[in-house]
Amino acid sequence: MLTSGVDRRRLAIAGMWVAALGAIAAIYFTLEPAREDGRTREGGEAPTFVAGEHVVEGPSRLGLAVEEDPGDIGHYRGGPRHTGRSRFRGPASAHRAWRYEIGARISAQPVVGPDGTIYVGAHDRNVHAVAPDGTARWTARAHHRVWSAAAVVGDTVYVGSDADAFFALDAASGQTRWRVRADGDADGAPSVRGDRVFFSAGPHLYAITRAGELAWRFQARGPFLLSSPAIDADGTLYLGSIDDHLYAIAPEGRMRWAYAAAGDISSSPVIGDDGLVFFGSDDAHVHAVDRDGARRWMAHVDGYVRAAVALGRRDDVIAAVYGPRPRVVSLDAASGELRWFFPVNLTESPETGVASGPLVDRDGNIYFGAHDDYLYALSADGALRWIHPLGGDVDSAPVLSADGVLLVGCDDGFLYAIVDAPAGEIDAGQTEASGAPEAFGAPEASDTDPIDEP
Image (tube, rainbow, N blue to C red; front, side, top):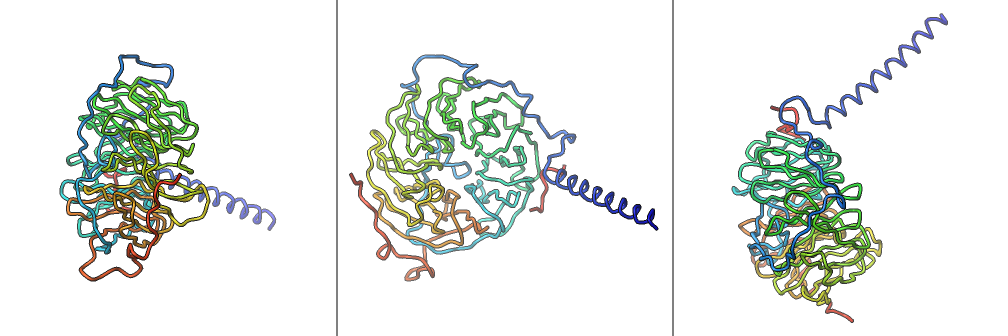
């Protein structure tokens, strides 16, 4: 009987080990891209250029012309310059046309394809394609959380995830065309210029052709990157890093210069109309740097600036700010002087505030979400136009479709489509501008599997 009891215990222990190993294997095969199917590129095989070690020197770039702002709704912040400006007019009031349920947090900015299909990744470990009427087109597995925007180029959707992978998906079906295995979470939104796609993952910025051929990677000094590179007219890339530096990287992957801030740079840089590069930092400043890496100005804004700033229509820079004074501010683009600010009623915690990158429409109106569960619309001078309640914090930057629909993700797991309210009607819970705080003047899972399907 004693022997029988020992055997039963051994069998039970063995069974637990088998179950545990099975669970580990299931997690591995759920999260890890298959490597032997011919579609995987190993990012470590790309030539690597290291910050401070591989430096290229050249003449001053101050006279370089600034490329036209495309305002492309298929790309993060409208395209390579990341201006945050739209070519379309946003809603003058707020009415929910529809909402698409994902069931998990959406921190990524949605993007819109040529046919109106909306693409957004989420924390449910999937990428979703949604029709303009809010119905599902396909869902593709990303095998881990998706934090940032995708990019749509022709018939391909490019997107990264926390599975240490970057994917090229067929825009019509969600099928994987190729993927890159990276050395860390691929949390930076991709930027595209010509035949090149750039994305950050772990401590590296990767350059890859649209066909999936690795060109090079740049290694920052810090452990990881959250920023998306802005791309200048000559192909130079500007990239923020958690090592407190803004890097300028030549088109072949070597460092031009590094500008030191006094805090982490999660904010993606923005190229202004005069060639200045703007970005925010955890040092509670918005910085303006010229193309040779020299500071033009820095403006203290009393909180972290982690979202990309936007270019206003009145030669100003619009920045979203965390606590202790959560708000949106307008800064003079030439001097950094504060023009106006709009406060958001939140706690004084430095970890709450406005994480949603402001969007500026064709008329200069400004749209953003906040950690108070509201979506806001301001006029170009900072006056409140409307405020609309959502079901959770809003970290996603909004985007306008070609027909003026405002699209934004929310922490409540829904993608929202906001349009003008019908005449004489205001949605329940919406606050009219006349009853809300005014602006303040300047004071002193899946239908399609991109991993396992051929």
